[in-house]
Image 1 (tube, one colour):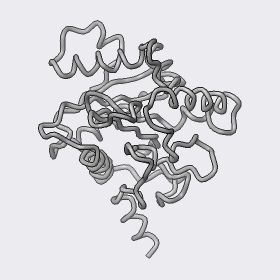
Image 2 (image 1 turned 45 degrees about the vertical axis):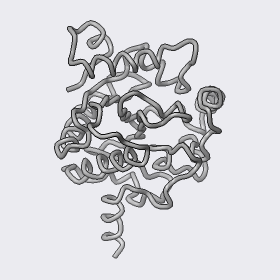
Image 3 (image 1 turned 180 degrees about the vertical axis):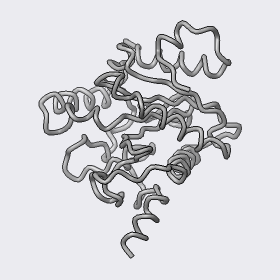
Image 4 (image 1 turned 30 degrees about the horizontal axis):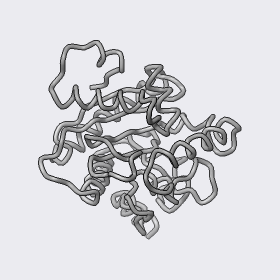
Length: 247
């Protein structure tokens, strides 16, 4: 279910949408005219550290289970892929004309339903409460930073992609590039500078760096065009589990 960049570049023609989606991603990562803001992502792509998967019918009932299978497989090999590892899931075009809010609901539903089927216990070192700055999405015992881009985003171009795109960065990636390391602070400055040029909107106030004070990563998973965030974390499955443990 997982593919390397080199495999997709050299493989026989896949189905039309899969081939086009990977080509679009490759062009986004390698553009010199409009450099993509995520420097580690570009480096990871160029050095074949990323792994790719394809998700058919992301709004279908089977999609969460398939996503879980992809994440489980990725978790077993992620540490072998490099310092800038990431899983990129490219999704089949939705049958309906979705607006940003529709994609937001779909994204959180995938995470919720995927988590509901997770057979592994939530990692002990990750808080259960999404309001805790140290909380993050986990699957099969592995913590991830999740990212979503959609065809409906226009002005926030860093969150635009012709297909629904999900990316999952393992937490170990940030061990050397967080707010407490010189490299992390340098990368943060470079990325924010690129982002201010790339997007047609101001940098979203929820965008912070791992290790920064008052950082809530769930607010960064899915960004609206406006500088707003949900008042509560949409990861309802985890919230319900957290509430039951508190009572």
